[in-house]
Image (cartoon, rainbow, N blue to C red; front, top):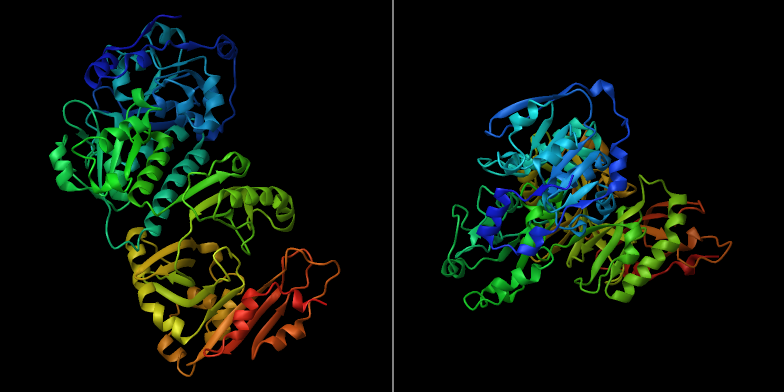
Length: 625
């Protein structure tokens, strides 16, 4: 059982790339205890109605070939990281009898490392043919090179023996261009094979969401970032061009891919191109030595004066994230997005990992908030490491309390989002895209804050000046976004910030369209029923609506409770109403479990906003009795 080969192609890789020899001679690791699991009959839950299922893949000759599965595979040999990790992500790691082509489990995501350790045969070296056959697999998953005559034999060899094969589409020798669509298709097909369709769609959806989020966040950029993707091998760097997955991601994220039709590039041309960012591909033998690869650019005498070097925009890009990458394509998208748009910072952290996360090297300030939020619950501005520590402690204290008050559909604190703190004036907009994809703005509010650290929803206001100053530029922005997204008959509540000519969205949220009280504010200020407009395709005529509203400000004040609310406190709504010159509506919320006393809708003179300035700074304790 221990006869092993590295394979001619692997040896050729060593010869051509100069890979460190020691990493490729690591022995295959056997886990006898895990192997016992496969020596006993096992039944895996699946829906028989989903079988038989026929999947079109490819054979060794590169020809399309259909394979039919009558039930989910139970003994899988998976080769290379994308094959193994995609199966682990789908939740079928217990079917993998051998998972080879990875030097160490540390290169997997943390959540999959334990599952990988339970695979009977692991390691970088490949099992030889005899050993593979003795394992009696019913499915082999790998790259095109896996099924060459001198590695694990052809797909025809296995099909004659009743064993199905699955080749990563992007690994096909003539699989050009390599695209995100190929990676999505591989994951979805494997989901069908193992009756894990819902999980597969979730994994693909996460990647698509990441792409769409990055596109929407950067739609306001006036200049497309110019990116060069290089791998250092041989005399000249290799270029990942228009037919590579890395190149496809750059273009999907609306970057300009430099030297896109070249296979190699000289250093003089790199200097001439003067890229905004250089991505340096890190191959398997250099995993863990990413800085050494970056130094090949930053320390090179011909390149060290490049603008991107001086700005710190030389980025390591691991091969597992951009070549037949499967679920790790998600990493490739995030790395490339962050490299092209350095002021765009976004991460999702499971709540259990917050206390373990080191933010000492992160750019501050940034925003920490639940993945689904309401009333700015659990939202923090982090300006220092101490702020982070305090926020995590506060989250741990309040987690149970918030879940008792609200369902997860309203406040989901199972994971938190970290977002760059975007400077500028903040606005909230309710908009829908009609049947032609044209944006129809229904209201625009300015969101005022008391300070940099303030993340509350205390005060929103609108008026003739707010609408006229922003409607045209926001419409243009939404058209630009929709040119990328192709949305039709779709409503959204949008939060964005404006700094000079730059518009950056914070959130596009369909669930918050015409949400709590914003639709009322549109009605009190302008007589607009936002829900009716969307459902009946009505388009407000603001030229008519704004006549006679000169010099007026219409505000929505959220009366959020102070953190240290004295016991048995009652709110004096009459005293609050007397604070404002004109109250349009005072909506009382006498529910102790909710974090607000109510909502006030007011009208003020644009020249006299002292009442708004005061209420913005108040903790409302002066209105308690």
